[in-house]
Length: 340
Image 1 (cartoon, rainbow, N blue to C red):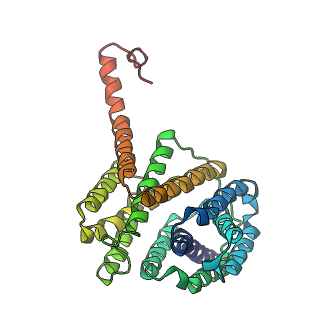
Image 2 (tube, rainbow, N blue to C red; image 1 turned 30 degrees about the vertical axis):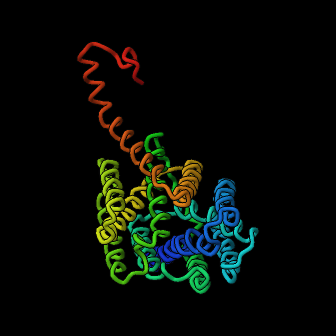
């Protein structure tokens, strides 16, 4: 009985830890810092630099995450007191902490349903406070850091879970492109006065509800073999809605897509050994940065090109077995036809 109670407390603590840190990234690092510095890359580049450095450092220290996570979150809490006026060194530390903690949290996941609930809490909280001005988010940063720090004491971060999975170049490239597509659209929408979704009471409940629906659907279908095709269709629909200027429909579809693909990505990442997980985390930081550059370039063409690339890769992978069968019936090997 005591063991069962301890397990439930541990899972609940990890739930709040994951939710608080994910929300901190969304409201403070991804949007708050960027908004406060008016998207000037020369002022905010230390955050991604710190993030990528943190991921590399985590490869050597992730086995010490039992005590390291709490130490990092205590430092994050101290930095949060003046997050809005952080100097370059402090911005680097914010990124370093995020880069260190994110893959460690993913590596700690043992019950996937707990993380899905954590994402739901994060999206609900983040949507509700997304339109708060960056300069006024200090209390939010302090609250989220305090929750994460307190939860880390009970989340049993020292627990280890052996992961022996692998990832193909196709899957790695697809995940990179999915995040690039999402980052490009999110960064563009958050700066678009016409298509901006967050902060409008007419759309808040739409966004929250369809985030939750997307999470539930993805959790139910997390191992479905057709998820790649579904994600391609969802992103294509989202981009077409953005291009058509259909703001109301976008407020229904886009949150669903974000939630769905986040669950699918996390599911795949949790199966990877830590070093491979760290490599994927580095690529995701790069994709997020490229999405911001697309938004700041005021041209959406690169995002459409990325979508076409994803479609081409998916179609090639889908048609390749059929092509091999045709060549076999013709009496030719793939090598003779110049195929891999």
